[in-house]
Image 1 (cartoon, rainbow, N blue to C red):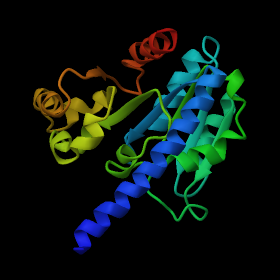
Image 2: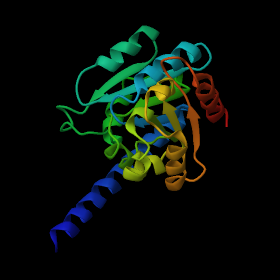
Image 3: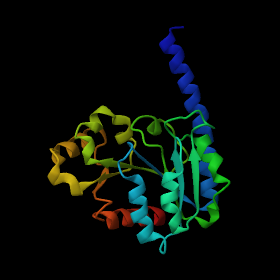
Image 4: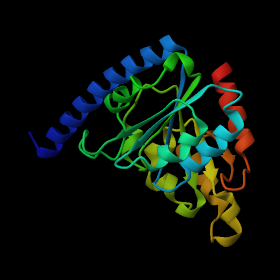
Length: 224
C-alpha cells in the first residue's frame, strides 16, 4: 500500500477512535445537563481575554466552568482563577505527547476534576492552532472560533476546515481596525465562501465591544 494511503488509513482509525470517546464525553455532559462550547483559535487571538470578559458579566447569571487546554504552563488558568469558578488545566505536554490540540481523551482526563452537575455551560479553551483542533471532536454541543483581525483577510481560505466547522465566529480586536490595512468586507466574503451564513459577532475583548452580544448568544444556546 502506498505510504500516503497508509497514512490516511491510520488517521481515519485515530479519528474513529476519537469520535467514540467524544460520544462518551457527550453522554456524560448530557447526563449532567452541561452545555459544552469548544472554543478554538490561533495563538494570541484573544480567547482567554474573552473568557475574562465573559466571566465578569455572566458568572452571577450562568453557572460557568472552564477546561483550559495548552501545551505547557498554567498561565491562562491562572488568569481565570480569580473568578473562583470550576476550572481545570489540561496540558498536552508531557502526558499527551505535546499535541497541538485537545482530543476527546485529553478532555476526558480533566473531567474528573470538574463538578459537571454544578456547571450549566462548560467552555473548553482549546490549544491555539488553526488546523488540528478542528479535526478532533471532544463531545461539544457547539464550536466557537475566535478570530483576530490582525491575522489577515485570507485565513478562511487558507484554513477552511477551522472556519467551516464553526457555529459562531467572534471577529476580535476590532479596536485595532483603524490601525491595520485590513479589509473587513473581504474577510466576511471569504468567511461566507467557506461557511455560508455562519453567525459572526464583531467584537473587542479589550474594549468590551460585542461582548454583550456574545453573552446573549451563550444564554440563548443554553436555553434552546
